[in-house]
Length: 420
Image 1: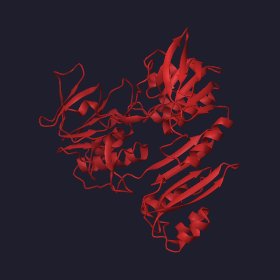
Image 2: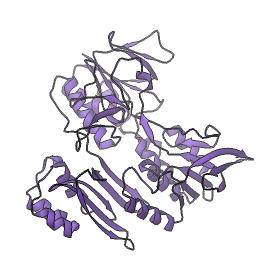
Image 3: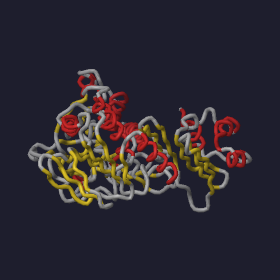
Image 4: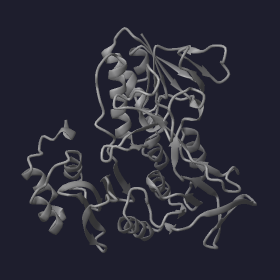
C-alpha cells in the first residue's frame, strides 16, 4: 500500500507518523512545497523574537527522523491531482507523476492578499514562511517603523514578536475591535486598550487604502485620513484553505475540501485534514473551516487511522482559541458569540483587564469568552464539549460565572472525554 501525503506541516507529519505506526511495511511519501524540513508556521514569531533559531521551528528535531521511519520526503509544488488514475503532478515534473493508493490532502492555508494598490511592492510581506521571516528580520531592528495590517489571531501573534524588537509599531484592523472573529466587542476592546497601553498604536474600523514608494521607505494611506511613512508593511489580513490546485480534481470543494466524520473526501481513497478542510462543526453540525492546530492534529490522526483500515470518527471541530497578546491571555470556545434563543452572562473588570462571558442554550453551556482569566479555560472547554446539562447550576453561573469549576465538578465531569 502506498500512502501519499500532500503537505508537510503538522497535519501531514502527524498523519505520516500515525500511518507508519499502524502499517510498518507500507510506503509513505510526504510532499512539501518549500525547500525546508517540515516546520511549524506558529513558531515563526518565536524565531523573530530570537527565542529560537530556524532549526527550532522544525517539527521534528532529529535530523534523520523521517529517514528512520522510512518516510520518503519530496519537495515540490503539487499542481493537479487525477483521482481516476490515482496520480498527482508536480510543477516542472509533469512527465513524472507520483502514484498513490491512498492520498491525504493536508496543504493547510495560504495568506489572503488584499486588493490594495502597492501590495506587491518590496518591503510588503506576509509573515507565513521561513523566507518571509528572514526578510522581516532584516528590517525589524529597534526603532524601525512597521505597519501591520490585521489584528486577528495570527496578527496578534505577529504583533507580539514585532513589539519584542522595540520597533515603532502601528496596527490597522478593519473590524471594530481586535480579534473580531474570536472575541466579543467588550473583550476585543479590552485587548486593544491593553496593547495601546504597551505602546502600540492601534487603529480599528480602518483600512489601508494604498501603499506607495517614498524614497527608501513606504507611504501608507489609511481610510481614516492619516498617512504614515514606514520601513516595513506586514500583511496579516487572514488566511484561506490552500485549494486552488484542486479545481480540476473532481473533489467536492466549497471554501475548503469537504470531508465527512472519517476525514474522507467525496472521492474514494482520498482524505483531507487540517486547515484545508471544511468539516463538521461540533456545536452546530454545519460545515466550518476551523484553522487551528489542535483541530488539524486530531483530523490527521483520524484520517491516518482510516487510511490504514481502521474506523475512527471525528466528533466535530470545536472552535478553540487561546491567545497571548503582550502578556494578556484571552480565550474563546464553541459558540462564543451565542446562538438564537440563547442567553448569556457577562462579568467585566476593565481596570483589572478581566472578563468572562458565558453563552447558554437552555441549561447547556455552548460558548465562552475569557480575558485575563486562565483558571477557567479547561473546565469551560470540558463543559462545552461534554454538552453537559447544568440544571440548577445554570442559575449559579448566571449569578457567578467564575464558579465554572464548581459546576464542572458537581456535574461529575472530572473524567470527561475531552481530557482522554
